[in-house]
Image (cartoon, rainbow, N blue to C red; front, side, top):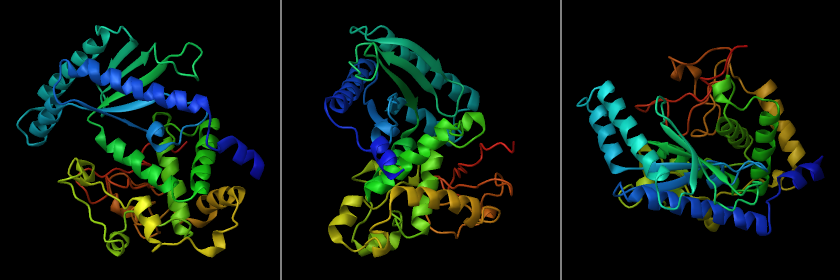
Length: 338
């Protein structure tokens, strides 16, 4: 089992992986060039599994967060009560379709199958780069989701990546659990199950609870490393008015202040996978306690999410959209009782 898991989830290497990275970089550049002709100050950032490095083999659609100053100004006016919900939705829809036109009629004629979804919490423009030279696609194309007002997803993906870098077994366990969930059709929030992102939060929390991982959002740990967030210099430290910072793994590794307990030195991936399943099946007190990688231990009560928590399902706090923020997000909210 150990060899099977290691063979399946080891880092892909060689020309194919390098070609894919170049395809993604080229896609980002082409998108930005086409859109910047009509929108000044536009910024595109890849997120999701392409950023976190947690893509399963053969799954290489690209998630891209798009920042347009005009759109964020409209969002601020809506939040301040200056614009009505109807007016905000109309203006947002207009911007999404203007971006769609930028890609549809750009000189490169590289984009195809463009489809806008505007009536959603996060507006999305789906499409395909037909000249991407994607080594994993028979025709070389690369599909993408261009997401608006979704910078929070970038820091979410970045945090997952930081945890995966602490120990290679963390990444392996994340991929094993993600693969298990997808193969059993329980990795879709739209389908009444948990999203892949939520499953990875469950992995991190389990490893924190047994002492295998630190809590990168722990302020005491940051203080010990003399590391301080600086939203003025780094805008990713404060997205949507939220505290979206964490201790970088590289900083922690250099200092040697946090060390993984010696008892895990020879722990194999199958043991961690069994421990993960056993933890949520038999150990974790899900009827009273919420999962929270921000705390990294079983201290957050379910009652913190008064409007969404249910006794029969997991309650999972988003690491940044926390229960005490202006936009609390329970990642277990989509679970169906059936």
